[in-house]
Length: 353
Image: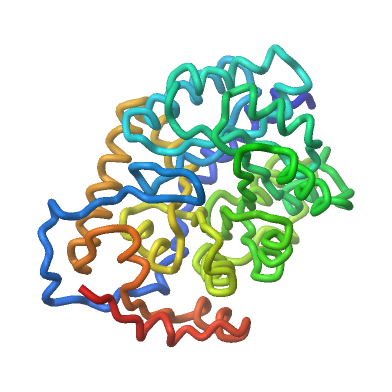
């Protein structure tokens, strides 16, 4: 199957699976503040992710591109949404466009629609420095996202089976580019050990892409003639992965991706240490069902909910949201404790007014 057809299949199966409810932050609870001492109009949600400054903590995360007219339509709408709300946006993997110039249009349309916004290129970890430079140049990107998708490739019928030299290739790209490099998992989480390896080669931004959002093991299984379901429940949860990376590497900027559906989810991800969150499946579903108006309404609702939660907690900005006390329970608690991360530290935090 060619890349363009595979992109369309991925969209179709993502929409099919997006109706499955996942609540990766249910085990994270805020400590209620009865006297928040704040006015909702004082709340600001602008944030900084590494060197990137954006007005919203919501990233439109990598979804698609390289699939002809359907992906042009999707990316055009997402770029309009990003421009209207000053949100960062990552495109899908550009490898298709590097191998077939006819597919460039589905990526170039993003910069055309949003000429001054934060746009992020995307390639897999097999990419060379030359390919990375070409991908950034293609859309005048502010950063490059390198996605790690070992599990997806293993389940994919036509996927890669060799992953040797990944860290060396990433290091070469970091050293060879003039824009920041973001490492992104695609739904299985980043561990503290992997974060250490990445920090040692100069990575300063990690999108943890935790378990709890779009499940590419299940998506690839839908494309197989024979079921290979060993990895359907594989991975580090979004909440646990944020903690693994941020607790051990406080100077790395974390993007919390995986199962974000509400403003409360966003607030919880940030309280665990994220600087921003990534959303893909929710936006794709809204666009499919309600066109651009559905995207606009979804972002407006998410921003409203986030500001309401921040008001209830008495915090005026994203930095303060990372200082409020939270209680971690259930499987997330047990995971973190066994991994050497003391959850009591989160519960005993004190935000100074």
